[in-house]
Each structure stands twice: as structure tokens, then as C-alpha cells.
Length: 183
Ligand code: 5GP
Ligand code: MG
Ligand code: MG
Image (tube, rainbow, N blue to C red; front, side, top):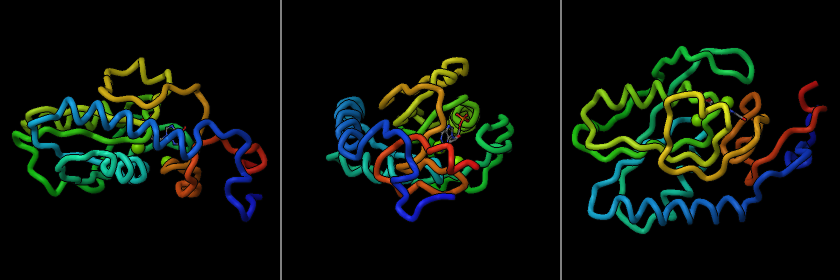
């Protein structure tokens, strides 16, 4: 049974709200420098990247556009399978645009490697990735995010956009769930 106060379902807090905001501000500085003089289209991957996109974009002191994609990777429970389907495509023609894909976590990298090759076939000027979290397994996939907040151990985390059965996305911190939540 989960508790009424969602933060009390966590056994361990990996990153506090303050740590997350500080990290996004650091990433934003790098992005500002790299994209200086270029037009920037940030593409958020629904639904998990909503929080990262909202806060990262607001750290950027420059003009930018935001668009969204929704993809489903078929798979059971907590693992993705590599079979990816577009549920919502971009509304923007990315021909000649500098695209920065914004995601909250790369685990196996299956979803993003598929997404990047899909976007790369659309004649963008550039396609790069910014992710708040990356798990070591992702190193096995051809996904090379230009901006990574933290590398984390191979544990299932929730909060700040990351869900367990669609819940916990609204936590301001990121942590691991207590065993009682799963049973
Ligand atoms: P990948 O394709 O890289 O294996 O993972 C893609 C998606 O799986 C992520 O965007 C995220 O939605 C989900 N995912 C991977 N690891 C975690 C995790 O530790 N916690 C949560 N809540 N979702 C995860
Ligand atoms: Mg995601
Ligand atoms: Mg999920």
C-alpha cells in the first residue's frame, strides 16, 4: 500500500530538488555556449521529460522553441523492448534546425537510439541529446548524449517526471521506492 504523502514511499533520495535545479543550471550554461548564434529547437520526450524540459528551458537565457514527441516502447513492467512506435510526432519541420532532444533518463538506450536515427533522417542541421540521468547499461547502446546530468546505478528510480505505474512523476526529488510499494 502506498502512503498518502508520496515522498514517504521513498527509501532513498538520490537527488534533492536543490541538487536537480543546480545540475540543470550547469547543463544550461554548456548548452548556451554550444548553441550560441544558432537557433535551438528543444524536443521533449513525453511523458517523463516534462519536468526536465520545463526547468532546463527556463534556465536558458536565450530564445528557443519547444516541441514534443511521444513514443511507446513495447515491453512489460520496468523494461523496454526496443520495438518503438510514434504516438505523437513533432509538429515542427526540423529541416535545417538544431535539435536538442531532452529526456529524463537513458536506461538501455533503445528508445533514444531509435528516436535519434528517426530524427536524423529528417535533415536536421544537428541532433543532440540532453538527459538528466543515465544508467550504465546505456553504454552498450549507440547513444551518446552530449549533456548528461548524472550517471546512476542500475536501480529503478522515480520522481521528477519518472513514474512507477504512472505515479510519482510529481515528486520534486528523485529516489527509489520502498519495497512495500511494489507488493
Ligand atoms: P530505455 O529505452 O533507455 O531503456 O528507457 C526508456 C524509458 O524507460 C525511459 O524514458 C523511462 O521512461 C523508462 N525508464 C528507464 N529506467 C527507468 C527508471 O529507473 N525509472 C523509471 N521510472 N523509468 C525508467
Ligand atoms: Mg523518457
Ligand atoms: Mg514510465
